[in-house]
Image 1 (cartoon, rainbow, N blue to C red):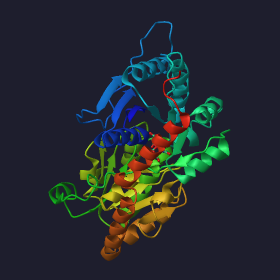
Image 2: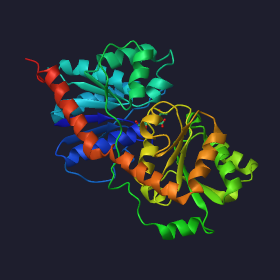
Image 3: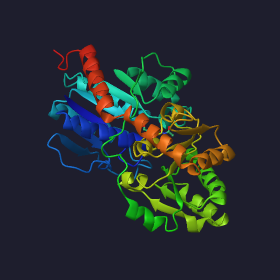
Length: 381
Ligand code: GMT
């Protein structure tokens, strides 16, 4: 098939999923057109089946805000008209689902009927989408999509509970490349960081408020009181500055390393003992899945879809949001018992294998086929 993928090109989970999906579909012989305002971060290879179309938003002194939506809709129309697209797959409802609706209407002028599939990722529903400045548009454009998927059962339910949506929503969970995300032998790297044999705790995110970075630091501080340990913070975002300040106030700077945004995260996960993700809201938790695939047990909150990924008492532990005492206690129970850690590490990898790209990507292929068939003729007579 010939698919136009629209997503955010940044380190955010939705952009990562969209890009990995496109790469994997291209490997399976499909032609993929990425339509984004920058080259997606994870689009780091050449493939004869992948094309990248940059959306340019011309500036004009009259515009306080550049009309990105209009530029994106025009780009989508252009790509569909001249590349024989079978469908658009847009990731993250705001504004991509409503822009896709507009592009679809415009394409009818050219006698083209191109189906739109929208994948809901999380904050487009749980936080931003519920804001009344967006809700009517989000509800309408989800309903107008020809196919809608959500990355967890939780997100599907949350969408149906809070939006005026009649459309059926199919759950297709996020996936991981289990060959790339496996525990590589990085002992030399570990020794460089954990010079005294300390335990290594990890956190990855885009450092937004919803990630509760303060809870990561508080949990770590409690663990470090009991056993020598270090914390690696991967990623960047608005809460990084406050987190670094908190780290100084708590006198933890010698044992916390802020690595910033990284590409080869699997190498860092390979030296990790625990992954901490105490989010206040999380539709899925892709970073937790990637860490688990590298055999790293996870200490998480029980927010949203996290319990669908982290099995409490088997692949890690889930706790009520904000319960740093329990998170620290659970972390210590694994870090102080090597046998138990080994079992959890194996379980984590096994659980990640259930979300292998090899199982999940074909679910998208089947879904595309189904939607394209339902929508019917691509060229309107
Ligand atoms: O807020 C983020 O973590 C980024 C956000 C995104 O859409 O870019 O991530 C959401 O989508 C990811 C991929 O489906 C999920 O793994 C994350 O759980 C979800 N984030 C939240 O729900 C907070």
